[in-house]
Image 1: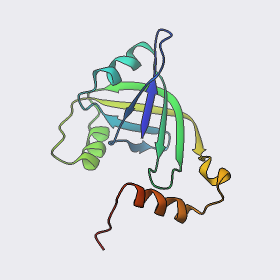
Image 2: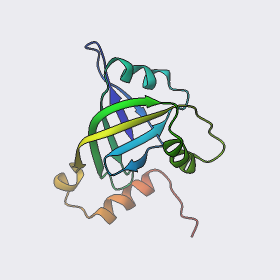
Image 3: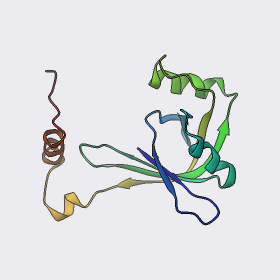
Image 4: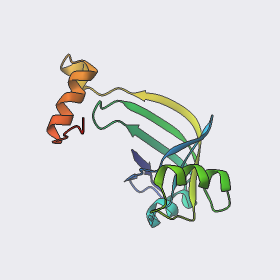
Length: 133
């Protein structure tokens, strides 16, 4: 998942956020895991775009909305901690109020007629993934 946000006319910065989770019907959230730029950007410009993409199928969703940094939200903290596990302590959560959502549909499906299974198989092999089965 990539997350972008820029301020003061600067180009957007992208950060991978593995802790993204659904907090409610119109809200997503992720943990602040030692990411000073991630936390500083919404303080200047809360507009945010978040792309969640499966690395193997290349499909996903783009969410646009407003970010808010929160420290005292026990429910958001609990949900994100379930995703991360006990080895990743965090104090702050970036909550995103989703204003729009759209499917990310990569060009690989239109440039080279392929099924999702074929695309997934290609990228699994390319990354050297070996199934535990």
